[in-house]
Length: 136
Image (cartoon, rainbow, N blue to C red; front, side, top):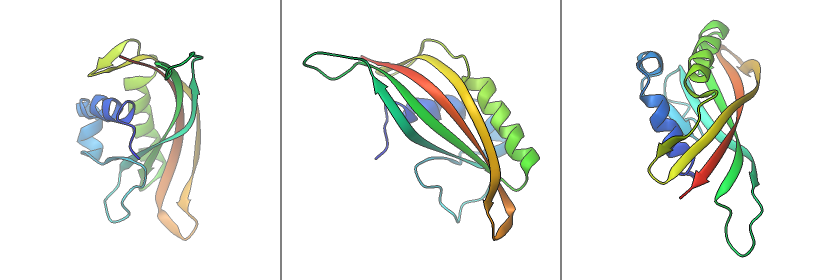
């Protein structure tokens, strides 16, 4: 299930960057990346959520851990795209999109690996971010 409180605003923010879209077009997915689609491409997944303590209601402030995988034909391209994404979102404060405010985005770590041991033409760089969101 797509979490529009996070992915809708995040995808929209990334697609505003001509530096990024000139390389990947609009190939940004939440969840499974369609294997038939070309690369380079970006995939996002949630791997953790730390809600603030609330009594009797749903938390309006969460820290969400988001993984952003960058797929490319070689390591240099994947790392270059990862750096562009990081330059757009790392350190972003009080970005508002519809009913969501990204109070802060912090880069956590990266890992790299060939995407599939049977394929030498696809490379993946995994980046993780902590996104503090406020829902109105």
